[in-house]
Image 1 (spheres, rainbow, N blue to C red):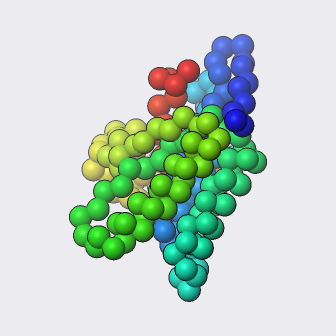
Image 2: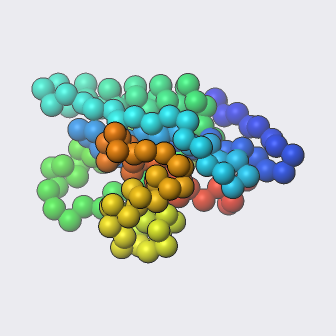
Length: 170
C-alpha cells in the first residue's frame, strides 16, 4: 500500500488522483485538498498509439496510472463513470481502459469514488447540465491556472478530482 496520511492542525491533507477514462487518451490529474484549498500537483494525458495492439494500449494506460499513483501516493481515486448512448465498440474499449485504472486503484489500496458527469458538473458549476466550457472555466478559476494548453481529457480529470467529496472520506 502506498497511501500516505498528513495531518494539519485542523484538517487532513487529501491527495486525489482524478481519472477521465479514455482509450485513445486518458486524462490523469493529481490534486491536493488542504483545509478547503485545492492545488494541482500534476496532470497529463496518456495517449495510446492507434497502431498498437489492444492489450499494448491497455498496458500503456495502466503504466501511466500506476506511475502517477507511485509518484504522488494519492489517498483516493476519483474516476468518472461512463455514459454512452452510441458506438458500443468504443464503449467497450473505454470500459476496459477504465477497468485498467480501477485495477491500479485496487492494487495500491486506493479508495475509489465514482462520479457521474452530472455530479462533476454540479460540484463545479452548480448546474448538472453545464456546458463543457463552463466546467473548464470553473477549473481554471478554482485552481487559478491557465488551462489553454491542457487537453480536454486532462481538464476533465482535474474536474473529477476537484469534485471528489473528501468530507465523507475523512
